[in-house]
Structure formats: structure tokens, C-alpha cells
Length: 335
Image (cartoon, rainbow, N blue to C red; front, side, top):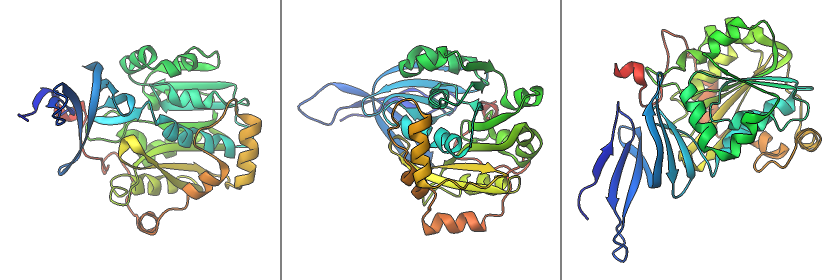
């Protein structure tokens, strides 16, 4: 079998290596991607090719063509989305908030450089304007080039693409939005995003930019039975300090090898039932959703006993001085 040969590991980035095929009838070698989930756990899968790898001003980036999951975007060593199942993540991130809102006209997306979040928001007929604000021009450029399923969204007349820090962009804008979406990279030590998960950001900058009936929704990291205490419970508890009504919900993402979490918040109660959600899906959305339905959303907010108790008992509040991080680190930690 021979030893695996490591071919790419910059700044603690995930490993790409050549691994001889163990099928004795096939002597061709395969390239593999390896992500370190924790000190004692790794996740790897076979590649067709590495489409792009490099380091931008803010983060390590790779776009991989994988055998199992299609094109995969990796930032700071963490898989952000995979072509074959990204619809699960992005439908869960976008549609519950827009469907719960009585009349969503404007959407502000923090992050979302690959374009999938904007793509889903633009399916809503009521939406007049989508602002997508990502800090990294290089991520946006190569996603626009390689992720063909999002090219129409990038060209959409309702999309306003801004390259800037989302915190600075929200501070500078005078307008308010019906929906604000956090499609940020996971909070890793030294990464560019962790300050956008803090109480002070939510309270002083984000919430004042929501209109009456406005809804905030964010991805909130791993939410599996063994991983939910990394950042999910803390993000949820932090948002509870700022908004009157908060819902946590989860879904399994095969390419992440885990259950994932989102948190949705507003100062108005969420009173939409499964039947009304299905009705609004038919009336408001162009095309068919592949994952989300009214019943599915309601069930996704019913969490298992272990996770539900952890959310109930969490006391940590996310601040700049007392942040929590998932395993790994960003460029600032490396320098």
C-alpha cells in the first residue's frame, strides 16, 4: 500500500495527499482531501482535482472537485458547502425567515461569497433588493467563475454585491432591512468573522438596521449531539440577550458529516404554522424547493433532549474578549 504523500499543507490548512487505491484490480492512485474535525477525528474523501487553492488577504481558500460531493468550497480548513447537498444548508438558512416575515422586500446577507444564499433569497417574488456583503473579493471571484449554478444569481438585477466588512457596511448604511442573514464562516480563532457573532455586534449594529417586523437569521455552527456545545449553544444564548423571540433549528448535512444549526430571531413572535408556510412557499417562491416544507421546518425546531437541555442551560455570552471557537484557526492566528 505504501505511505500517503502529503502535497499541500499551508498554515494549518487541511491536507491534500496521494493515497494508493486499495482495490487490487485498480492500480490508479487517487487524490484525497482531509479535514481535521478535532484532535482525534478526521474526515476525508476522494478528489477528482483541486480547482483552486491559495491565500487571500483574509483566509485560506480551496475549491475542490470531489468524487462524492461535487465541487466543495473550503475556507480556513473548514468545508463551507458542497455542490451535491448545499441546497439543504441554504434552504434552511434563507427560507424560514423570509416565509415567516409578512412582506419581505429587502435582504442583507453578511458573507455568502459563493452566491448560494443570494440565489435562494432571489427566488422570493416579494423581494425587491438583496445586498450581499462579503469581505473577500477573491472568494467571490472564483465562486462566480467556478460555481456555475450561481452565475445567474450573480447577474441578477436585484442583487447588489458589495465587497466590504459586513460590520463596517452595516454601520455606514442608513437604510434598514426586513431580513438580515448571517452566512459567515465558522468562528475560528484568528479568522475574520468571530466578532460578527458577539452580543455587542448584534445589539449595537445589527438590530438597529432591522425594520419593524424584521428578522435576523444566522448559521450557528455544528449542532450534533457531540458538537453542539462548541459554538451553537453560545450563539443561541447570545442572540437571546438581544431579541425577544428566538428559534433554534437543525438539519443533517451529509458533506459536513454532522447536524448543523441555525438561529432565527425577532422582536415579533413567530406565529406561522406548517400549513401557512406551505401556502407561502407556493405563492411566494419561484420554482420548487428541494428540502424545506412547512412540516419539515416545524420538526427541525424540535431538538433532541440533550441539545434542548444544553440550549436551556447555556450561560455563556459571546463577546470579543470571551469568544468560543470551533477546532482550527485562521490566518491571524498563524502570523
